[in-house]
Image (tube, rainbow, N blue to C red):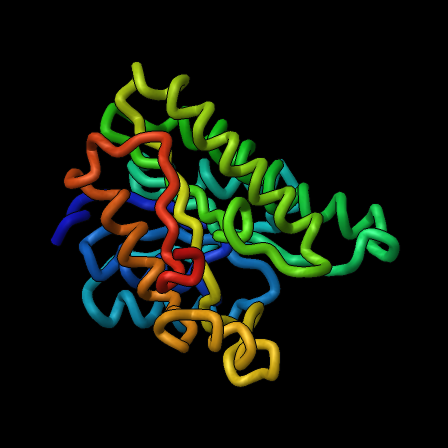
Length: 245
């Protein structure tokens, strides 16, 4: 197991891509804490699933739009398990709308969760991380490669995360902490469900003609979190089944 004796925190880990990441990290031997909001049953189910396989997991209620809640969640995870080796910023929302109609409230909420919470979580995590720490930010292949109408706020927020990732690679390198981003393509989640008319159209543009699975994104994250990725820093890995090829 690549991540035995490692302690990880995944924000937004109860559903969708975040849940796939939590499961994969646990499968690779990590102790995993994750945050959730409004999905307590999903969170409990994942914890029980991991514990049933003799793993260790903790679900923490934390609203990513609240900086204090994010900081407290990081500190709680580190205190409970005795440190923090891996931070995965997966929590995110997509408030769609053409620019004429998108409200400032939705725009601000998108940036609070998709950008500010990432910054705050990293700040808090660095107080607990030692050399060899790993930070992985979940972005989107829409950042540079494949956008769609009505996604301006979402794409802007993910572009900000990509920029933060590149910049912090320089800052954290001397501390031997790596930071990278994973940019998923269409992935079957409740936020982006398969089986819809939109999904059918999108899949026709993809080489595999299908959506990805959350666990497939989790596999990329688990690799970046492992010792095998020790010389990968400040980069972005696109995991989209060739959509942007």
